[in-house]
Length: 112
Image 1 (cartoon, rainbow, N blue to C red):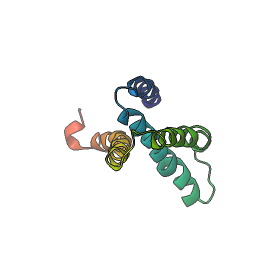
Image 2: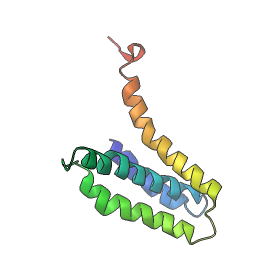
Image 3: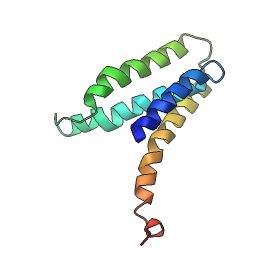
């Protein structure tokens, strides 16, 4: 389900890029944060134990995320404010499912 949402979000941000240049940068930030903190760092921390998304992170997320940031940096649409918003937005999108998974364990959400 999460993967389907990410794919739909990627398609939507691509269509929004001309009107809202921040959208692709937020999505690229999400991809890079996911690759580094949820696939590369666990692989390094576990001393080479394979992480399921490691190949996807290395072959898809890094090149695509870096390409979007590179394109934005070479255009007139990137400034420090936009970059900070993009990273914060990507981090918030990455944190959302983690927060929701932790909240479901709270007594309020336990429906018996």
